[in-house]
Image (cartoon, rainbow, N blue to C red; front, side, top):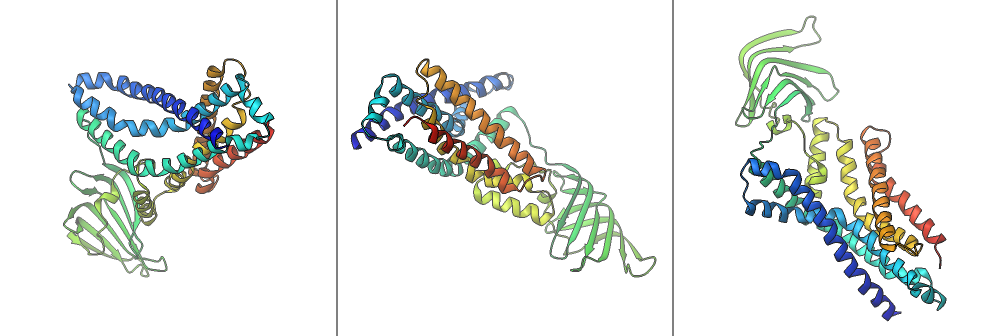
Length: 358
């Protein structure tokens, strides 16, 4: 059995490497040619393009690893069947489960490795690649925001502004509502503008409403006003385009916590956070399905294995996308949106494996 395990792994690993090199080359060429006219127009040097391609390499590996595993397992099992080797192995008393156990273990180990590889290598390298691309193409990120509203502080302070200017760190027509622990309105501040200075906001042409138990409430008008309580960081008002999928686990946790604190929507971010744990197990799923289906083709093994790889991968990614959208819009919990696709395909893999020729 040890000899057989060694043979299976020695056949699997070279095919996996070759298939991944092929798929990675496709992704790299697509990325380069999609941006080639931009590079030429901006005079980007070949050294910079090569550097960006190198930084994109870990992201490509992360993308193609599940597809490469699926194709490799299907291909080698199909070859065993075509050469009558699999029939001989099964007739010798070794079950299909015993025969493919090394591949399933390999799939599980690759899933674990993929999780840490994504968090420690892929995300930092891809972030650096995007920064280098934006710098080379002269694309500045715009954080200005309009009609921004957020909740901050233990005193439940609500901020609203018509426009936030990130370059000047200023607010246009801010409106501040301050409530007590019971949620009762105790103060309202209207201003024409506000600017961040050192550690707090400075308001101009201010109208302050208090004593709401009176009718009408008291009104105070000031040219300038500041309050130590009004110290929400300007970055909180920025246009939020951060993607949890491009953050490390620690960064994701901090970001989701800040969204909750500010009273902003966070279902999509929480779904993406849970997906960080479920997505690496895609490798285990495709290994299981490949082991169940890899021996079914007797002709055109390479073509059928490739089509099977791409077909199942597309189905899985579409299902994950649909579940993620349902979780984002509140139809299902975020954790369900992240894990439901995995369990559906896990059940499918177990069913197909139970029906496989053994």
